Image (cartoon, rainbow, N blue to C red; front, side, top):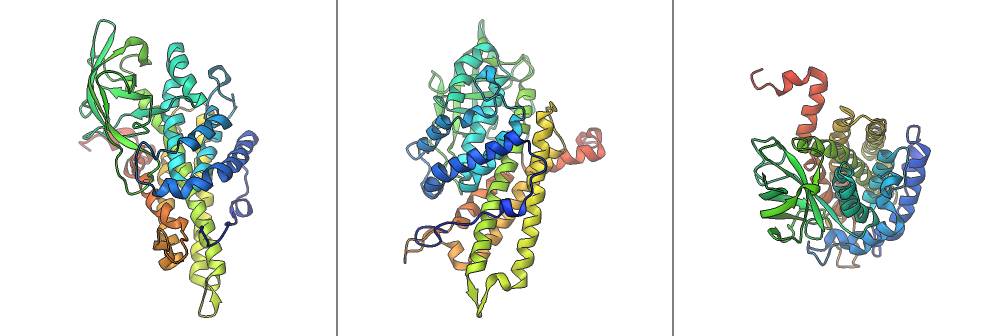
Length: 415
């Protein structure tokens, strides 16, 4: 609650959650990013969550502050201009959780910029590192990642993907249509998954070059500070040096990147869940009904006890997936799929109940009487997309089922 209501909300994470898994360097990053988010993200969070999507409304100030703080360096090795952490995935995940505590949009911008675009670029050549990854890490360029199309999102197979990269003498000519491309309206370049006669290829395409058109920002239910738009590619000339990895390896690049991204989305879900939990507990203690604090009613005692337990499980799940990724396991399943589905469903569930805790106040974007606002409304709108993007939760269950029954049984349509 803010703007004339409760000035600050106590945090219950440190009181209830006892860290036994996260490496010390990642714990230090959490403390750093929390201080940064409290100072730089929290004051802007309400406006970011409520301003209609436009290029002008993109939170460039917060993006620039993240660059100046060195937050974009967290996932990367020193050889690339990063911090060279021993557990970069863990540190990146807690960064996203702490950003999402105040703003899911800012966490999503960071995820797409660093994990999706950045992680894919990391697999590129020295040329790609210098031209695209270095400015991304410095925060002087904005990255995006383009796999989804109007008729290809969950299914990224060659039969579904329509964007084509035709071979030329010195590279590729790309034609296609990508949809819901995060950061695209403000990005300098996109990492684009394409179909080709060589198999799938991943190409870096500058968004201001001839043949590229970026549509207007989509108007969404939530996450309004994370801009998405269609990207139209009409005979775009892309040199060989802008290809990441070998021809035919494009899908592998995309899927390994999305696996890391799912850990980030899981962490974002925990950040949102923790924020609702803190807001709800604070309100339950202060609000009275029938002469008693709402916290004295057993219904809410049990409800919040269950959510405290679920947040504990969720944070442990994404941490375990990140530790496995840092150990060199490119596809840390089933933990990554479990974390993504469990953490995001938790965020949606607690956001819905958070509205109920606040009653009519929780339904308000702004109360005209005193201009007070209520954070649970913002998170209720923001949380839903986390169950959908970077692999729907139904797909995550299929991945988990493969670990149980085997890929052959799950993927064979004849069984």
